[in-house]
Image (cartoon, rainbow, N blue to C red):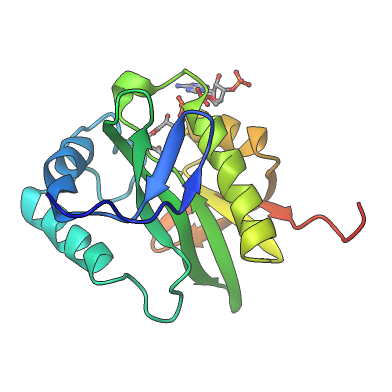
Length: 179
Ligand SMILES: CC(C)(COP(=O)(O)OP(=O)(O)OC[C@H]1O[C@@H](n2cnc3c(N)ncnc32)[C@H](O)[C@@H]1OP(=O)(O)O)[C@@H](O)C(=O)NCCC(=O)NCCS
């Protein structure tokens, strides 16, 4: 077992921490589930694709954005790995953006955990990272993701074509100082 890594952020029921090599099995279980991957253009991932993605996380992810990334999502009560959530940098139509990303194991859906982590990511993005704005890129048919983004305060801004797919772009601006 690897030593326990630092916590990125913590909510009432969840912890986000950097990935460990032993997360491969549970990460693959998530990426292999067609329901979980239903609204991702590439669909499910193979074991090899999951290993490749995990290797990228383990090497520190995007070197230009060391404070952003996707992190292992741990259910505090059980200690189990139940998702991968985080903040992803994009350049969209000439503008640097940061997306809040959330993906949870199906057994844990509809318990308020998605909204809990989305709200915590927004708070982390604005308070700790001082980002001016956050977005979510969502398949317009993904009702769960839209409701989750809305519960974190994001609102529909426009529809775009993103990496070959039609996406709804939801956004929220950082609160102005003093508000
Ligand atoms: C999106 C996701 C993280 C939501 O997680 P969750 O823990 O079930 O969400 P919550 O229980 O906090 O619910 C948040 C809101 O979404 C709504 N919701 C959840 N699942 C829903 C569904 N299948 N259809 C419609 N609304 C749904 C909830 O009712 C709640 O809104 P409300 O309080 O106004 O009723 C989860 O569905 C998931 O992991 N999906 C697969 C990965 C994915 O598509 N990620 C987003 C990519 S853009």
